[in-house]
Image 1 (cartoon, one colour):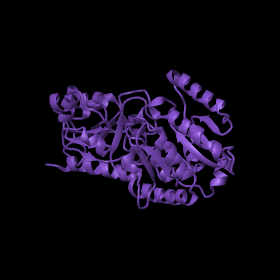
Image 2 (image 1 turned 30 degrees about the vertical axis):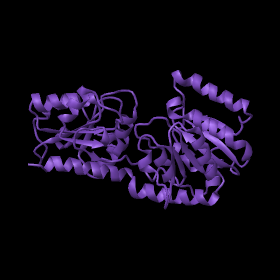
Image 3 (image 1 turned 120 degrees about the horizontal axis):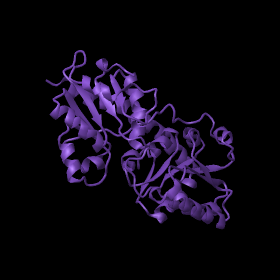
Image 4 (image 1 turned 90 degrees about the horizontal axis):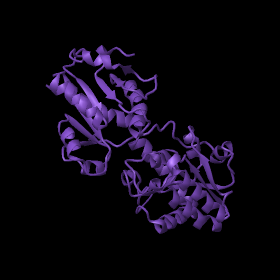
Length: 353
């Protein structure tokens, strides 16, 4: 347990189930600590390695941290904004509340009320900011560009995973479900692979119980097309960075996405990306000069098929886009950069009169 006296920022996590929000906290907090931000988490479902305070410590929030007039409470859900308002406005504790919004839909009246009471609001993309009715700071998510990095030898990276090192590989990673567009990827591969014997496809990710029938249907389609040995369902892996290093092309076929880190992870691994125009994808992938890939309309199978064929058939374009992607990710989307930008929001509130 961390001593609350030296903590300036509290990052609550009030859901036990692993989610994108929880994952964000798990990845960001160690980087924030390394940058000198005095932050601790609060709540269940987080690794013991993270700095952590208990709920009993909340009674000590009337006491200010050394050299500061207040603390920051960084909420990412409604259920984390509400108790912060009680602590600040009812108990009159010296707190400033930051809220990060990742939603790309119209907020309910209740959510708007809560957001309107925040001291600062962060939007995770320009699309997200467009749904807010208050002033916000846009800070896009970043990734660990050391973990997600190109292999020294891509053929060796393929062989290490038991894949055919002589083949080019197109990949689609994430939960297997209709929302994620896994069927669009499968149908694209069924259409393109028969005429391209030098390519295979990999789908990495699991189907939860309610989506198992969907996954089984996709496997049946692949089998009927005679491509079961070339369109591979490899399941969920904790070493997903190693799977990115084996790819020559990544496709993000989502029909809907809140933000979506997979294009960034692919680009950081020097893999060109074809992504649908959902979530923040359009703000991540560069088209035109120094392209890192292509953005296509959501749920547009023919566009996905055409864009994929172009990249499959042009080795030089893939290599150049991959190199540009690595540079783009490192320059603009490191998780350290995200943590630094968030720290600047904190500092404005901590140092304000």
